[in-house]
Image 1: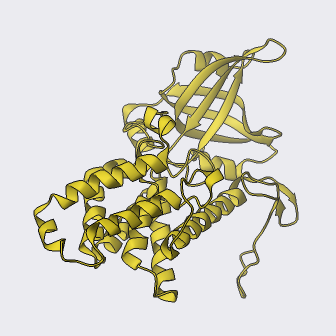
Image 2: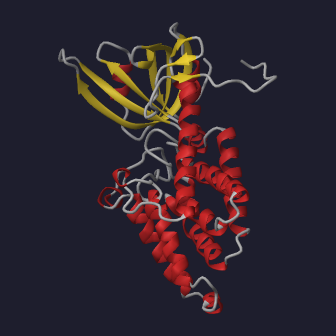
Image 3: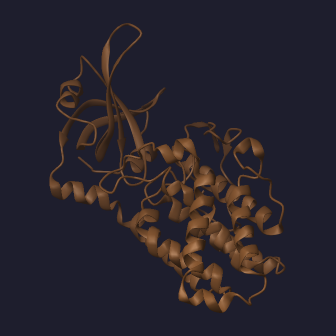
Length: 344
């Protein structure tokens, strides 16, 4: 039986059953009861790039198999998979625990994803090294030094975009590439400030959307619930700034202009305003060109990821038309190919 990732399974599942095996973690496993009082297990399976909800009814072979497992276990799930009214569903399924070697392979994720995220992290490091303002470069390097490992296992969101282990690195790297390009078009923008704002805009998610070290569970935390990632990010930036100003290098920065505290204030503004509107959680609206640029770059990258994921999972409704994938506002239409592109 062919082994595929959850993402590949979603892409390849059809109305007609097809046999596939997936290796994943049981992120959660709960006992439910249907409206007709029929018991079933509801399992949320996750791997490095995606997740899938599977239901095992009492009269199927999968039900006792799930009964022998616990949330957090790593499993091999073999089934004939179909795409139905409720998404991708298994038939004639079986499940068993993975070996230690198989677990390590799941945790590492597919090679293409690992390679892409490594390249993205290298891009972030290179753009940080290229900053000319020693204070913004310094706080960015301090962030990567102290929290790089945690950064690498944080998602950009729980749902909708870059909702996977390491997704925040992908999101930030692409935003930094976009911001760097935009600064070439609008040279009046403070490039170092904008790049640092991109790096820090979602840094509070390191406590809101972080995965466990040895799994794909993203636990809810008091910091995430009581503060949210914007206030938490502003607090982190303040703490790192204070530590940076106590370093030996900071003594030479007292004569720099703009003055140190104004640089800090503008960075905090970028973090606080990046959602763009009060109703979306920003405590303040964008009030500088850099803040406006950051907000639009953030929104653009999130939307591009939503479209890319949507084309992978949305059911077709007609020629080149696919059903809506939330939170996008309407049904999807296949994009126009580039001139000369015969891949349609």
